[in-house]
Image (cartoon, rainbow, N blue to C red; front, top):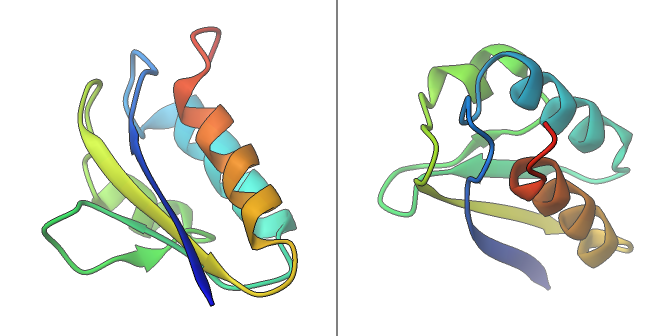
Amino acid sequence: MMAERRVTVQTEAGLHARPAALFVQAATKAPMDVSVGRPDADPVNAKSILLVIGLDVRHGEEIVISAEGDGADAALDELVATVTANGA
């Protein structure tokens, strides 16, 4: 079953620069495929820094993160934390 999270990006830089790098690092640690995208568009591979930055997600915009397989919920929780942490 596909696990999914809709989250509003809180990081000041959106999904660019350091927040994007942290997000991709967390996605890469997940043992399953992870995708991210805007609610109204096709998702991209969350393990690709170029694709994630290419989404051009800004502060305050909503994204959908999804993963499938064992540990998907834990992986998504970690990914949500990377874009909602104010310290990033």
